[in-house]
Structures are given as structure tokens and as C-alpha cells.
Length: 69
Image (cartoon, rainbow, N blue to C red; front, side, top):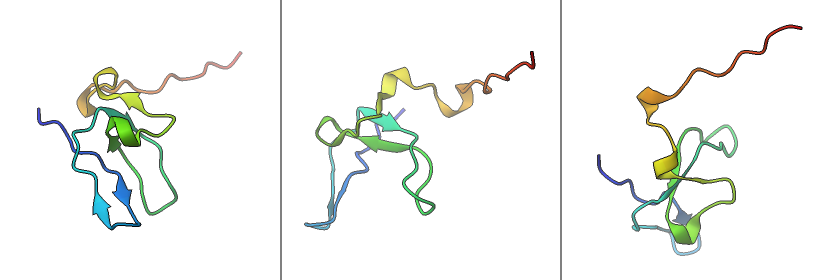
């Protein structure tokens, strides 16, 4: 499995970070951007998780169902 690159984009310099990613987040930032985003240590957002702690796409569990009382 290849290590993804950091998805951080610097709008001031118009350059993307080329560092290997070590963090992942599933947050969406508005309707235009959805899905998985990867970040290096320097650009890690507050709610990111280490990549090693995140299950692969095929290994994700189904959400827990709430039982009616």
C-alpha cells in the first residue's frame, strides 16, 4: 500500500504539500469537498486520526443501530 501525500493546499503560495501523510480525517468542509483527506504532521487538523488507527475502506464496520427501548 502506497503512503498518500498530504492534501494540504497553501492558497497563499498556490502549492500543495508534498510530505507523506500520517494523519487522516473524514470531515467534510462544505458541500464541495467530501471524503477522506490526508495530512502530514505539520498540517494536521484537530480531529484527524493516525492513519494506522483508521480501518481500510473494505474493513469499515456498519454503524451501530440503536435499539428502541
